[in-house]
Image: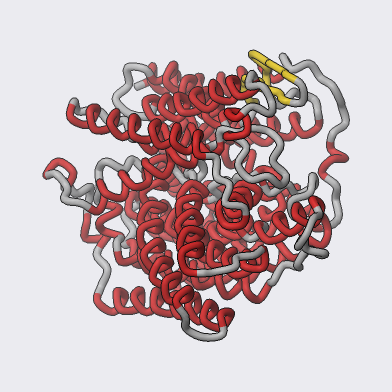
Length: 623
């Protein structure tokens, strides 16, 4: 334990910084990056002298587990907690009978308690299911393998390392530089391929200059990247069609959903319904009987064993988490009634199912591209339906009861998402997975305290849901709760359309599996559910890597390091800006140039992509 004190302590310290500073960046962008590569890089730079062999690998593994854990809480809280402030603000501005007269403050104590409850539940479930998750060969874990490569490069002798200067270090500079250039206005953020406008509605197909997305694409296999892109194309075509609809027609109105703060038709509901079908199928497939070919264990599975004492402790964390969550619910309700009992049972079932899915998603497409909000979309939908069935006279004040429960569920899923990837990295590096449990728990606890406090500060400084802090994920969930719970006005047409797309995606996966191919329905659903620009950016990265490595048997160390460096460089800039913003800096003041032509984005895209291609093709020729 003494040898692990320094890496865990450093990881806990860095997770406090990361989880706090990424609150504002995440509220602006609507996504949070996987920060494990960034944590490894920081530890590598500060402790390079002691990083030798197995002990050095253990040091970096424990650091990255503790250092990334707090970000799970950041994602879980910023995606869902703003629901209250956004809904109250929109209803207050809309006016009318029963409209609220003020926006509630961020309840720091409640968020700490519910975040801790969700973190303990997610932590316990993933720990108990470690062997099942990490021995599944159908889960490629792209970001975990990138972290393994970084750790292996850090602890290797200099003459045995991949070519670091042109791969990791060059891509770090490229990721940071490209992101900074866009924020300064030196390069356009996207190249517009096609644009269509009708009245106040606008549709555009754009190639994004986003180093993080290109890096994510560089880690995924080309078929997975193509599936995500295919989903993005479905969404983009749907959005283009919606722009052509005549405002005021029945079809136009059917895509609007809730009536407050939503004036444009959207494909968001179709994407959510597609995700619902893919989620159900993925859970059924993972939890059901598995074929013999799926039961092949990967590597040395003895390091996946969890001893009896630790299993007891993991069960205890689940019990404590459930006790905190249900205790808060019963306290808010003033006792036990039909609603509290029904909601308690529902939360326990959904937590178990969605935590499982969160872990699967991370190991399937990586935590940076993982659509955690898709699983929470399903959870929120179920909780709303239970509320409608068990509670009379529902009003906006009930949102203050429902939202913290959604926060707890989201933190649980995000914890599973982060834990499974971190534990997979440990396994790949040959370290006993159980040795990372304490680091994960301590990092989570720190995040549960830091993130609600920073969210409170951010709301008072910028206002959640405003142009300064748009909180796009929170707006999406507030639209769902408003449409289903408060207005009973769900857009049925796009939901049916999305359900049909989900069924087609599942059929595609089943047929592909029988023919020996892996075409996961979840990857297609991710593309439909997330903004189309994400799928396009991921494909750009996947194509550049494929062009360089075509014909190679496996992805090379240089291309892995390049992709990881792009993600890390972009995340590093956001970290620096986050610290500056907390100190009073206005990010908008970075924009020194205005109105640069959109074609300048191609300069950055080609430059970043060429770096990924160059490292891939050079390694392929050399081998």
